[in-house]
Length: 581
Image 1 (cartoon, helix red, strand yellow):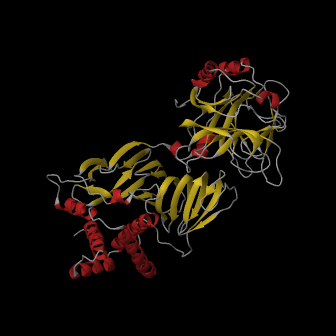
Image 2 (tube, rainbow, N blue to C red):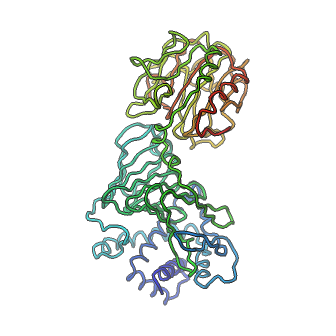
Image 3 (cartoon, one colour):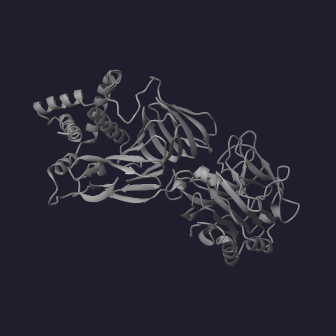
């Protein structure tokens, strides 16, 4: 019996034992394997950690459902991985020529273990492991040969080094406070935002960039359980060891010197190798000989594992996509190239104010239509792009900035109006792109609002998440009067053309030249409103917009559908990779 078969047998007996079905001989065999095989002990620990996590969270998390894990296996299908043929199988039924080892593996996966049993097993084994692990470490047993032996017993810790404004699970509002620290064993749940983490391991360190929503547990050799979300891993520290990420489909290992990305949502994971290699260790990777094996993901390659209810796990090989995992960095490298035709079309439409965001003079942003309505920049911001094609980035640390226009817009917003701009959100989040607000209330620490254009995040009501919102209140206040949401999602990390306007009492939202929502709203606008760009309030950080804004115009009338289409098409050809509606 080779190592893989012995560990497989260990898992099989363990499952039988906790259900009370193991024989006395099998229990003695289990004891012998656990005493002599460190790899078998580690396999049991990882199995119960994962199943205990699922039991603890039940079906509430977006991770892989237990029903999907407990489904039977399909006959194997041959797939190329790491230069050799391996068989992946999920589903039901048998197949001629499937050897006894594969059939045995199938029978193991068919065990239907109740949820409570998984909890009991995880708790029982945790007690056993915690009591035994120090002894294994001191004797050199139980150490994965791919991971350097730890020279210190200090716990693993993670420090948030940079971030956009973030909403963590232990807070009811976005926070920009730094540093934020997590220790080994902590459950890290980021609901909204992008954060960089520096993790000090037993040997070396690793850098992570996470994008909310994401949830995982920080372990002693990596991430114990990635329930859902995106993680970019930089494991290029000179003293780096392997860094593992446990997922519902198996263990992803970032090899020393590698940079990889891992995402997990619903019944699907993706592994992207940008530099160096990554490996995937999964119970569904079985060789022709019926043995468990690993898959190597080569540099600049990626693999997706997905499974629909009652179907086989599907493996899809593709090119690695770095932008999918590095939203904050990729945001800084992209700019909107505006055509002269677009500028001419906007000027010809005669907006009351037109801010092109081509830099600043003494903290002021020029209005292309005249000396009034100049924008005043406050806080931290960043200019993106070369001269004559610049845009402004909001949501920059440590003091996310805004642009304010102190003059009121009473005559312009009285009845019909239009707000036109290009946006590039860094990620799905709840942020205010622009608002027309009344005087700041020092006691309430907020402004009464009249008009808002916002991006909505991805962790609330699914009917309105990840969409553009337009709000109009009259009189100005704190209670919603009329609000509409786009019928389609906006696109993170892509430039999009947005028009939010009121036509004869009808509120309208256009994305990329197409009408995506309209509904009756408040027909008038309260007086005394000033413009705020980049967040909701003037003097209080709340709902900051994380991303870039460019070519913003405000009209004292509604644009016609023909004008909107003309403006979008005048610049559409100049935007690389711009998705269609």
